[in-house]
Image (cartoon, one colour):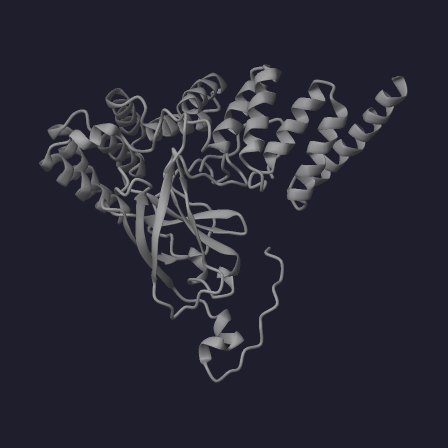
Length: 381
């Protein structure tokens, strides 16, 4: 992910759980067994509510304590088979950001994934107590499967997860042009996506270039070709591929997200505001981080009304404060508008959600100042 841009503020455990004391005659019931970290395999199917497979590959997401972690993808028929905690095979795209630092802090890298369990050698049964599994496809709401009480030795099959279409969404993370692709182009595309997942980027590039040569309006293939170029540090060709994807299908959200991320990398506030606005027009429901980007850009462009509106939309879509900087940003905006009491509430919310943030001391000083300003304003009234 890219490094943090100029924002109106600085950059931003699980509670302990009592393990039941089971009889030790069955090793799976032994508390020490529950603590063992190992791969936990799950398989199943994703279907649209009308009984058909999804129109594109779907991301399978593990949500633990409100924190989502992508784990893998379905195949073209909606089947999935994943190993929980092993997301090293996942190749990040711009729709998956670090929720605690949406602008990123990895020195400009666009290939890192948000923190998960992957580097900890799998998961334990205790890890699963507050976890659920869902499917993620923009424009749809997913049913969820609770994993609480699941055992390592259980049958991996979890059944079918249903996706429900959201109303008033123009843009999707799949392209309608895919249905019209000729057989040979589809075959090359599926091979390319498979190589991309395995991080065999040269092979992926070759297959995806073949797919778009056979079917120039193949928006999904152009998008994944851009990701293959991007993984090989060829940003110019990646941008061109994303633009070709948009030319083929302007309502395909993913390439717009990629171009937005480039604008964020460049700290180009005008482009960020424009690109974020395009994404939000296509889908205002699935991307709190895009509302955040739009708010930061509007703030830096001195448009406080637009900045406040976008920050409030971001907060509405992030009730669990995965990105507490939304509240910090909103607090700064409200303070600039002279709404000190409301700004104080937002700053306190930020500190409650992120008490150990690097800028916590500075924010506490801001809270003290806002308390004085709020008190003075009450006296004047």
